[in-house]
Length: 324
Image (cartoon, rainbow, N blue to C red; front, side, top):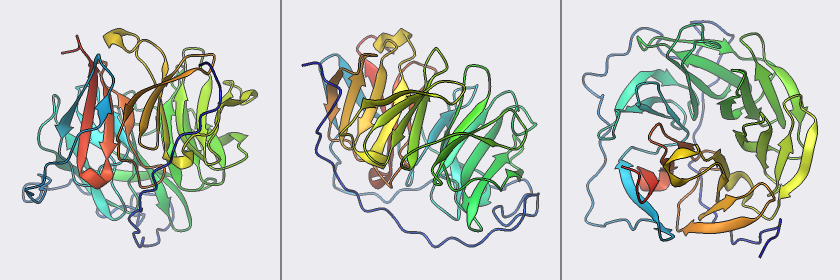
């Protein structure tokens, strides 16, 4: 039945509470980073998980879809693929982000410890970081937001740390502009200079996705998905409602690989696809989300969909039948 309102049961997952230390002003010595020298991961590079006799069940997906474990990673959060196919994995506060090698396998630590490195985005062109193939890391520190960069040599520095709150999600649009959401609530943009507010939202924004027309789809804490034009004007104030608030995650299909270009939405434990009329189809259930606004939900270079499960210490890969 075609409808624009979903009444899906929410699964509330207890978020890990982390006491974060304060950070200072922007620059290489900012306490959001410790240290900024090249990271030595020879002793602790591999993320080790405690073995268990309990086999965790995989989510259920519709016929024609496949789900498998791509990598076992300690408490994974936001995800972003690099140009070489490596997967960068955000973490909770006070630790080091992870890197999963192309094709999956064991994760290694990447860069220095950071205050709140949960949001990650690969900066292939170096537009924001100034260095190609760096990883942007967004989070909170010192009572505000912090956007830092980890360079290919695993040194790091703070890029921006004023004018915004805790970074929730980051994407590059089709012009190369950085678009990110924060807790204020607002969505900001940057072409390499100080971020500016593109638009404010009626409740806290979380996950964002950008369509082929450069429109920005935003999942809000009130359970709605709103659509904004590239200039920040509102295009649709209720594309979908009744979703799982900040446990809602968005990603557009890549076209190839059997996913088409539909909007894929993880709403609590349920995986859905939306057409552009707002009609939703449930294609999976039994996913584990959380902490709030922290789940990774991205398509990879192989056109498969990747989902982090923080509480299960794993990253899932979802493919269509003919995707290798």
